[in-house]
Amino acid sequence: MRLISGLCIGIFGLVVVLLGGWYFAIAVTLLSYCALLELFRMAEFTGIKPATKTTLISCVIIIISTYLELSGFLSREISNSVLPISSIVICTWLLFQPKSGKISDIATSIFGLFYLGFLPSYWIRLREFNTFLDSSSFVNWEFSKTASISGLSITLATCFLIVASDIGSYFIGKKYGKRSLSPISPGKTVEGLIGGIICSITTGIIFAIIYDLAWPIIIGLVFGIVVSLMGLVGDLIESMMKRDAKLKDSGNLLPGHGGMLDRIDSYIFIPSLIYYLIIICIYFKFI
Image 1 (tube, rainbow, N blue to C red):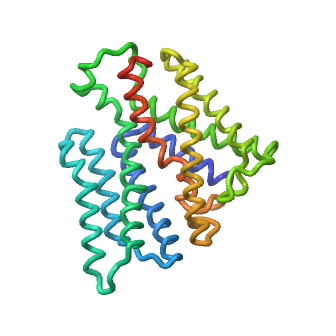
Image 2 (image 1 turned 90 degrees about the vertical axis):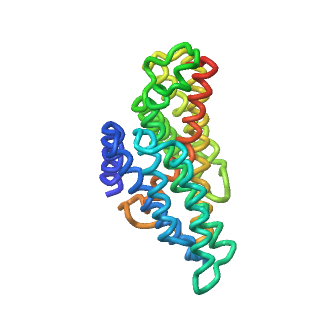
Image 3 (image 1 turned 90 degrees about the horizontal axis):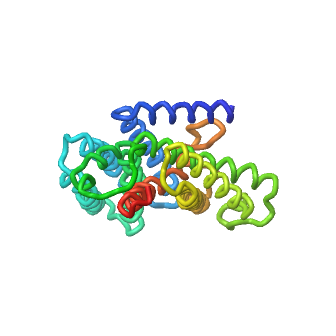
């Protein structure tokens, strides 16, 4: 069941990435929505009462408005205003509840907004990266080579780097792992981390060569390390929250894989870093 479930998730992810557009935007929205429900469920196990409905709606608006901005239906100013306005609305909502909210309620709600609203919206920015390439701010830059760079190629490469890191960490850690990496997740080992980094770097170099980028080894090295380490950070943060809530899994939505948050925790912090790292690389003519 775990294998079948994993294959279905992988195929679904590949299909929506290839389709892009509204299909990808809606998929990111649904995944984030389900994961946020699980996050707030864990928070409630610790006695915290976040503004669940208000935050869920705000996260949906953040992700959809990001796509609408990149599609030319919304101005950047309006899209950028959603996060601060949503934060104010959430705090106001908690303020006027029959039972006054606590600092932990506000903090968890705002964290959920950022963690599963703002950060996932960068998957939309990656997939629609052509919008940035066609923008006037980019056209004015002098750059060496970006003919093979597109939103689809970047998103596919990033996803494959994450998968390669996960596979390397799992199999090398299972066979050679001896030293525990963190008490937060005892199953993770130093050897597994090294294996994941090596697999991610190798995959990064392969993609850099396929896309005919300048300095493929350096590009693969940098992006491979960033993806592997940030994937680990995302995994450990979710493990820390589950540990605090005294739960084994964030939910039971996916047979054999636990909850949605268990499945996408490695994918949360990476897109924003990759997005700006690529912009920096283009600006300094590394690609």
